[in-house]
Amino acid sequence: MMERTLVLIKPDGVYRSLIGKIISTMEDAGLKVVGMKMVRPDKKLAEQHYIPDENWMREIGDKTKATYKDQGVSNNEEPVEIGRRVWMQLIDYLMSGPVAVMVVEGNDAIFVVRKLVGATEPRKADPGSIRGRLSSDSYALADGKHRAVKNLIHASDAPETAKREISVWFKPEELIKYSRSDESAQYD
Ligand code: ADP
Ligand code: MG
Image 1 (tube, rainbow, N blue to C red):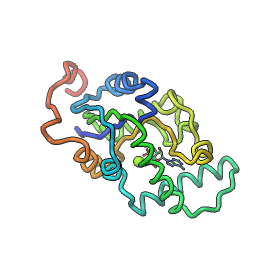
Image 2: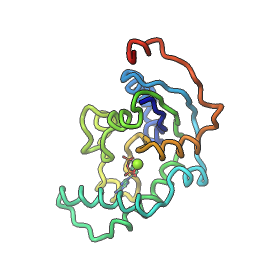
Image 3: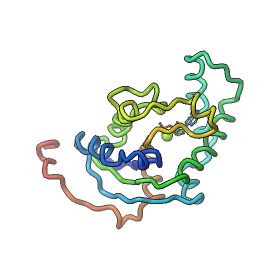
Image 4: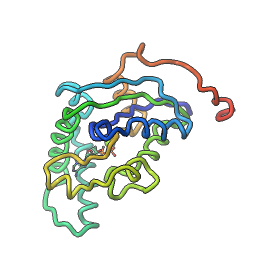
């Protein structure tokens, strides 16, 4: 099914000049960029992107605790506390530099982009994925430095979040309808 998803190259990706490589990876997989811009987010925009939702904060905490357990690192924080701390770090991370934001379209774009992006923690991300290939950060390193995990990229995780996130960054008229020259080879 044709879908649109929001992809954001975080400041570490922009500073490391990885915009081109990241876009190429998605284009090579058959996806199409239908909206794109550079933004220097302020606090308001960053907080519209990352909403402090309790369930989301708990999920982040659970994921982090599971990784700590794997690594034998002790941690007594409640998952939701970890999530709240990470949320504040994420706002600072997004505000720390320029981001490249885009809307990417294609068959099952939300799932396909998340697959290409790889797992949240770069140290663990599949070596073929964008995060696994181009970064190596870990929760332990990030937590020790009181910052968010530098994992290059954000990608929407579900149809409702994609719709919401696209509307945070783009006006409808900023999204362009066109066909790639290989669409019939891909889809017909
Ligand atoms: P994803 O970006 O893979 O969808 P999440 O939505 O779970 O991951 O988390 C949002 C972002 O929060 C991550 O991309 C990462 O930058 C940051 N993050 C998550 N967990 C931690 C943590 N324990 N410490 C620091 N940063 C974290
Ligand atoms: Mg997420």
